[in-house]
Image (tube, rainbow, N blue to C red; front, side):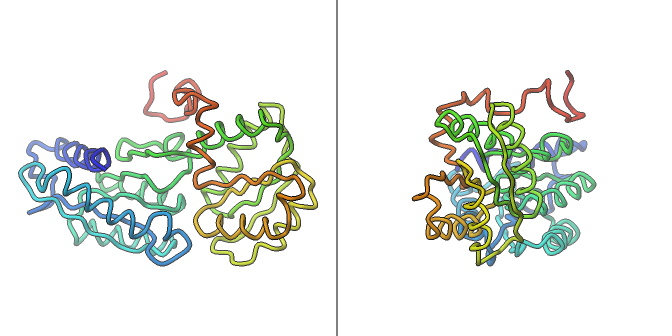
Length: 287
């Protein structure tokens, strides 16, 4: 909790330091942090009210002021819609005097906000999205992306599962930025580690019925069925795949929430899980 807010405070102070005086960059009478999250759609259970409450708890733990000004937490529901998220953040910057935007589950929305933040000279602290492009080719000095990304999730998961005998894979993938990036990164590591992707199918976000996708995965006869999705989509997909007997038939189900990360990180050292500088496409890095 303290680390979360400390990062926000550092961002605010960094933003302030871009001008000759701290007060020139911080909003008029308070340091305002906007929690942009999902309060009503398929990602609500994994962020949403929990993210808002965590930010408030962090303020209580950190202390009520920074830069001599009170800290305020505000929040809004992006409904898992990019246009809604962008409109909210634009309003925050134009009229709400918000200094930093945090959380942002949904990589598509996060990428759009990330671009706006850079244009406006603001700060984004991303704990919700997972697309590794945010810290690779799209990297920005205005964005901090932490908690996890698709590169690390894919590397440690593929390593652990393949070592356990899961050589052939089939993907059920959410058709948006996060799902596409997770499947792409995972496919790379599966191939590098001697595995093989037999195929896959894409589904729209907020899908209730995964029966046809589960049956396609079952007919592939793959060792592993990987769910490159999130939130209620992952919950529904795994539950329905279980009901169709995939596990009983010998297939291993692997889903992001995160991808059994706390257990499989034992397979790959933390410092080896993330993208090395030598491989990065970030133009900010000196190689």
